[in-house]
Image 1: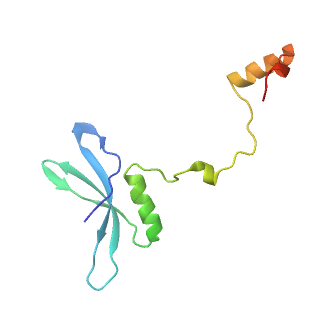
Image 2 (image 1 turned 120 degrees about the vertical axis):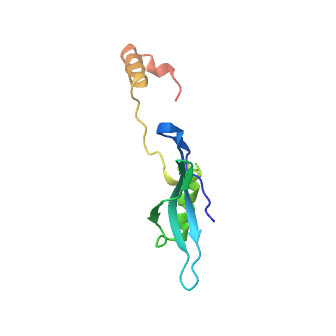
Image 3 (image 1 turned 30 degrees about the vertical axis):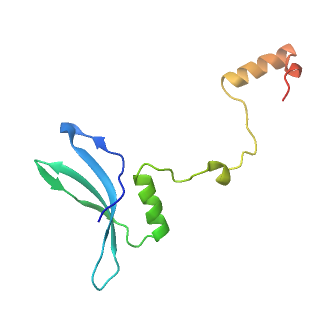
Length: 110
């Protein structure tokens, strides 16, 4: 049955909607993988399908499930991004410029 909650959010009239990935087995064809949402309307449960994601690679579907559960797409940003250069901005830039003008920047150990 369906697994994977997305953020539960409240809309008008306190309707709670939940998004999830649902795998539906088919007898003689591949399993259907659907992105669905669930909510109650007028006391009845509704489960419309938002997208058929069956053609996506299984790794992508698994990552989408993680995101829908509130997880992160990337576990460690440092593995993917490397800081080459960092420039001062805002208050740091103002303070650094003042220190340089006063000649006090030589007192700061980098």
